[in-house]
Image 1 (tube, rainbow, N blue to C red):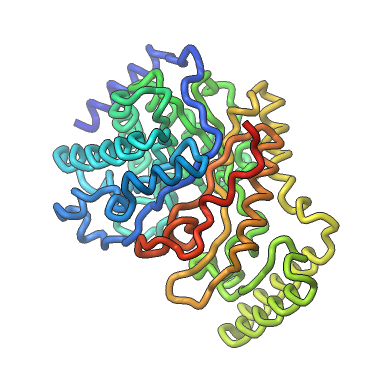
Image 2: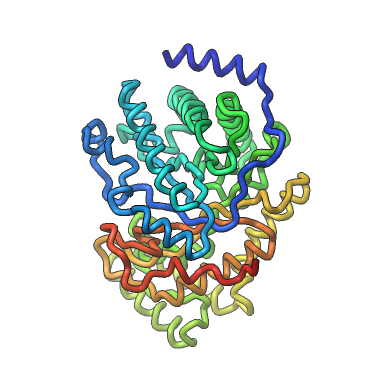
Length: 415
């Protein structure tokens, strides 16, 4: 069945160079839902209860929550879906059930008057993991073939929704090196295949496309849009610079950020004493947790980062380069600025199982600065996310935060 579908897609891609006649989907201000709230073990991915509640955030987010997001000024929800969950086995009945869950989620969001970007949110997995992640998709041709088929299937399924209301993001944060000629060429080929597969089964849907280097602005700048820049494409980049600020305390971000605490944004937000205290506390945590080369490397990273922060005359200097890179690429290729989408940014607030508690004002300062730069360049944006470590509305268990931030971000636009 997969082979026949792949053969049919090949014919469609060749015969149907189907660029849409006009851009049909517009996004200005978006927020992402969670990928998962509670990650079920892969051994449960065929359980009827797990499938019936996919995407799993539907247990914690309902019509009233999306109505609140609409009232706060968002026009679009970026809806991450775990592609590995779709690819878990070849049971067509199971896939149909999972797609039905996707459609129920879209219907809930659309019921609040919000648009939807269906985000196939690939994330890195270890090579020994028994379900597919970004690494496997970039290194295993058979896995990527299956993923291309999935993109085609989902794109076709989404044809039931108005093209002005639902878009498709074909992959999240590919990790190939955009500065390496060979790896960038590999990504260009893969991106063209994903675009072709999605377009072959749905000629109208807007496709969100991205570059390598974790979907960064540098990755976008390395893409040749010529072969795939039909009128219904949005071009995305993600921005989390400075990483030691936005990911401070993230245990999954590696030693260089896991032990950091209290790093302010902007650097002078709490006065000179706040940055000094945060640096001293972070250094003490590093010394207590690490030793040898790991300790020296992490302390050096902290010292260098703090030195750079103190040297900045304007904190915007740390954020501006990504926007300039994306704008220059768009202008060079004749792509309208409103088709450039800062598809993900944010700042961590808490971390599971730790004492991390980033001051809300630091987070607001950072996200407002990013939004201001995006809008000044004419870009649309999507903040990460409703819940979890970067949550603006909910915590880890779907509970409403005592001090939510989702309704305090949209302040720079005047309609």
